[in-house]
Length: 420
Image 1 (cartoon, helix red, strand yellow):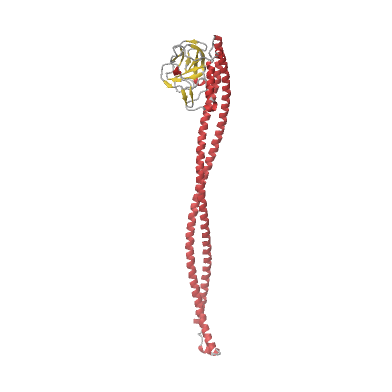
Image 2 (image 1 turned 180 degrees about the horizontal axis):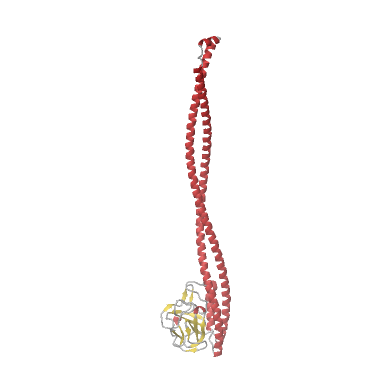
């Protein structure tokens, strides 16, 4: 079960504005002094205190509402900050992945360029060799045709007559030359045909080797091109993911800026209301016994327990702030008794306290009873020790029925167990 400090704006369990942000301790002490000053010496003064307490209750209610907004803003700020940090971490991680993918892509592109150049040279060489082969094939066909024509001519014409050679030759040397010339022409035609055929076959083998090398180079180039395209897709996917995260981070940052602006506005309004609350508290102190401080000594016989039940939350620091009283667990509707005789100075709604009763016991000592369902007394009424002043409940900022009991000396909270 959760209770709030007397006269301070409520903060729910585990959340709320940090004391460093709004100086909560100092304000609670100041407001505590103000409430202790609600003691009155006569009925007219009590009536005036009732009016001041009502004003202060209205201000504290506004403060409570604003601090709820501040708490929600702080929670949202923390969530957004965590989310932005997580997104930034993912973006930084992707930056490394993108850089690695880009480096691998650049390497593959460079290798692909080299293989493409080699393939281009092989293609050009193959085209050149193909043209040469076509030329040699044409030359071979022509030389064979020429040789065939000469053979046909030899077989279809009359063979050269030795007598004719002798008669036409002027001498023996010329005769020999004519015979040798005729034979040389035949041999030359045959030699040319053989050489052309041999060159054609060699070039054809060379072109076949080039075709094989070109096919291998083309296959390797295709593989590298496929790997390059795959790596490009990976890199583009990483960049797209990075861009999406960056856009999400921008949106979250915009939301965070808006939340922080709203939080600052709420804090400014709270500070303004706290100043108003301090002003009202000063008026209450002035109305209480001339503002004189007491020793805070307990009345004879000490203080009585307001209800009988276990202490579910002690006095002291809790969740980064001072829990200014003790919580006593009892069912709703349990009669709440005055811890000592005194005068009721507060009986009304007080923000996180819910329905609050404050009794002044004189000598600077006062007690408070929070989260009540209903009242059995009124402001200005004198009560006896043990008299029922309220019925317990779970009003205000509370997570279950209980009595929040405080003891204050000159407005400052002290541990109630030292007085019970």
